[in-house]
Image 1: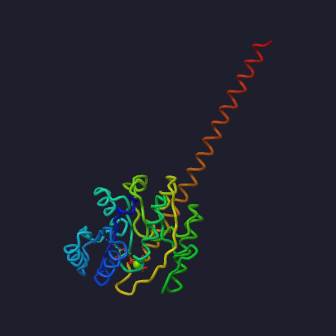
Image 2: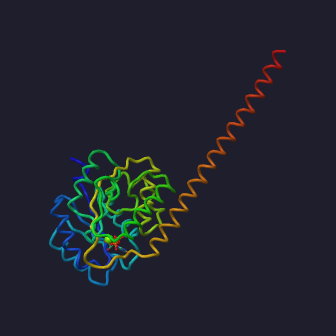
Image 3: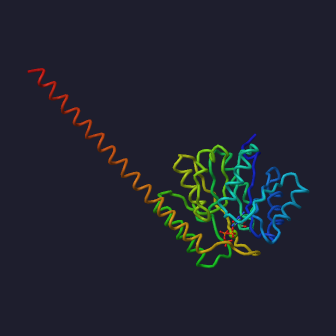
Length: 271
Ligand SMILES: Nc1nc2c(ncn2[C@@H]2O[C@H](COP(=O)(O)OP(=O)(O)OP(=O)(O)O)[C@@H](O)[C@H]2O)c(=O)[nH]1
Ligand SMILES: [Mg+2]
């Protein structure tokens, strides 16, 4: 049995009434063994009720109702906890708006089965692409990724993307109880934690398709949050490295001093 035989696809939703049925159908058709968890934040457009109706007729579909809109990050953390509690080996993040194509899930799961701890569906590696995005969204995503890799030194093509597969054992290494980030930077936060924990992170190319129904929840506050948090993490990492260097320097100086006094004592004894 491969890890991907036990997969939970977590689909966070806020006002995705027109997108949910098609996306769940596509997941079920593309990867019939996978279970789906819709994590809905009390969508006013009735997405939660639609999710309940789908779950009532399909034992591979589940719904996690949360009272109010608390952001994508919080919805995923609740979804991970739900899946880990039930023993799923692989936990997948997938948007409900059709941007992440369920037909490409197989490629992510193959990389997990080949040994990766975390697989990023990547728009910005060879073979990856974005369909129907205006220039300013492409520039924002590319610029965000260039800034992130420069500041955090992650060496990943797409650290902000949200189509991902985690091994359960990898999630356990990420100290998820400390994660406070929400929007794009939730994804960056998990990626930097995975790299920092020495996990094996693979990237597979995906074709990201801009939503055709419903409204984007992207906002300037999400971009601002990403910018200040990534900058802060970068500064913290630099301060941490400086502290290590100065600690090593102090240790070497103490050793030198010890060696010098031992030499002096040895010479004194020989006299
Ligand atoms: N449960 C929950 N889901 C959310 C929340 N905010 C966004 N989502 C879902 O997260 C996924 C991604 O949100 P989008 O609005 O598509 O944001 P995006 O993909 O960054 O932006 P676009 O590319 O413009 O669509 C979608 O499935 C949303 O319904 C939230 O606060 N709670
Ligand atoms: Mg989207």
